[in-house]
Length: 504
Image (cartoon, rainbow, N blue to C red; front, side):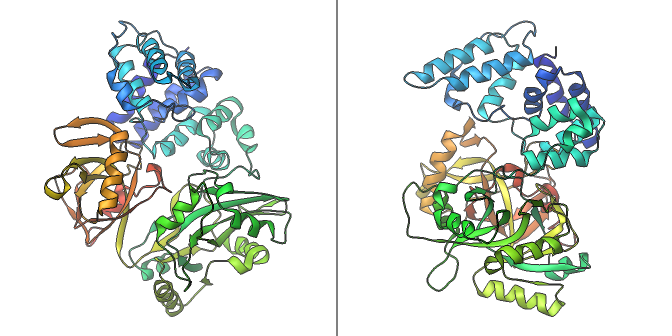
């Protein structure tokens, strides 16, 4: 039996090193020791996530618990799983007090180090975003299987713990059992930024160039008359987007999985503000804004999975089934044609273009160089780490944001700068309320929050700096908008930020 103390020790070891190899070795060593019933829970804990998602416990409850720690470690992985399930099952009148009592029970059996781990786990502070990538390598090492097999299973299932169970119990044959299932969303393939259009074109010998829309990512599954629509974070929004459901139900096919974007348009056909598109995803009542889909990939058609086919073949399937709703773009363009499309995208109110390798398969959940996004201004998606109470006109509001870039090796976000620019009165009021709900601690006038909110910032560039641990700092950053469609695992990496250094 593996104890929680073993998980805590490995978690600390992983956090203490910047070496990806050392992280993988430590994680794989623990995974090999697990009994089969422990694998799913331990994998989630090692990835810094509460098994099963949030349990309805706020930081105010957690910070108020004062429990004498146990002197010796006795908690097993199964004890932790049972405690989490118990807390999550509590609801109804007086649930807050009963959750506190349940938490007191499990904390009373934990050592001081285990208590700190559990409190951060329930509070959401252990989430480290990109640690999933390191975990995939660790699972592969522990099970002696190919890393690509693990990554593919995670992509298709969307479940890291379930993938670990399969790999450790059945090896390659068990991982091969994972396949695309209609009605179960898969991780979306992502684009990485390119400095210029010419640079992106120069990297790929055979490519397509498409509009980059200022919309929201969607993945649509149809099986007969049943249609389901998911966001980029795999949240189902089917009942909120009836017009998209009706449109896909009317396509000439039996089954299909489409990847694309959707956005609300004004009467002139130009995109409405991003926030209006996102408002539709959470709407509980009928709204006037209609969403228009723009599909750019086809992952399945009439019983045939297309994920492993090159993009050029997937685009042929897309044209066959949904050509009328395909995103504007050109195949194998000349540099002049690509530049003209880029200008056309901007003229129509969109963000820029995406350059895609026509020979590439669909590599879900990863930012590689097969898809490169090009925009005229410098923008980054960063994680909010903390905010400072404002002064003067902003007294009473959390204003100055502390921003972090994602650590691709699984550590916590790396701070790269601060900004209070671009915040409207509406955003100030919203973030003050949101941050207080996500607060983990206060230090003077700084409120630290669970690192899960992603904000898009515009900046003049970056510069080398010894002030922040990443060695770089943002120059003249200002907030464009929050990105509720993204989580911390989709924020830009510290490598992307460093890549913006002049001459870098």
